[in-house]
Length: 205
Length: 205
Image 1 (cartoon, rainbow over the protein chains, first blue to last red):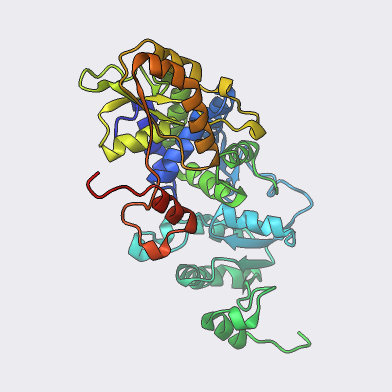
Image 2: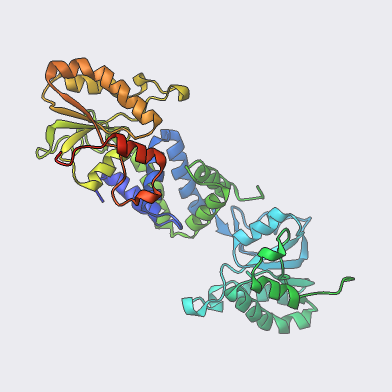
């Protein structure tokens, strides 16, 4: 790299570590940050520092939160007997945006991926098992991603949770796979169509 | 937006103000920043704060620098009689990366764009004129962008600098327009080909 001033070079290096940001984009962002007013730049810097200071994982569902338990777990309106298990807080956020789900969540904080060295013990599976064993849960909906790791994690969870679920009369369900709403059949992939066919249900379901 | 914790929402809002970053990308970056170690996140925050604290414009060429005059202006090896006029420090950086130019620079910090309310008085044209009037400059190379605003700014500069340049025997030149090195003729636009034809030179030039 040519002679960027030190502080500019450090910022570009820092930005390049973010996902999807290469040298060109990092430079563009850095030059933009220079143009921001002092207040705006310091505010952004403060926001980055703040999330490390203020955010913790909810001790019940492991979502990111500023106070523990998180607003969802401490919301009396939510159905605590219905637990949706997701991989990451951002998946939880996607369900919240959809606005359909009135139960509570459990964030695994990842998926089992043995090749990447992520085993079940790296996830929040133990606390999930304890939540089930404590009783009072009618249904655990496993909403891990419909990909290789997500399906593997789902199967693993089913096996691990099954004994406790039998004891506490808890259903274990898996979110449906199939054609996405709004899609055109001619454009969806073979894998999606295969899923949609094998998961077909009677019309009166 | 669903219930993001306040500090996360603030960070996402801050990131969305950056160029080319929409809601989705801002969320993705924010979730990545949460996953960074405390040290890495604070380092990035510090880098952003630092550029506002440490960077100033060089009082000679207006490039960003941590000490004034900047390393290029204070480099005894550079030819001070050759001044390349660019719109922005990032253009200067592009020339430095190319590594061909051994003179010094002058950053206008923008281009004339009357429709956007950017007049000549918003740029560093006055200090450039003073540099020329002081004498000792053999050539001013105008390297504004080959677009509407850049060409307009170039014409304006030529008119403004002409009297002083005549007095001090300073050449005013404009960087060449034409087919870009490495391009395939069949793929370049009509405008580029028109430029390349009208700017053609004798082979022995």
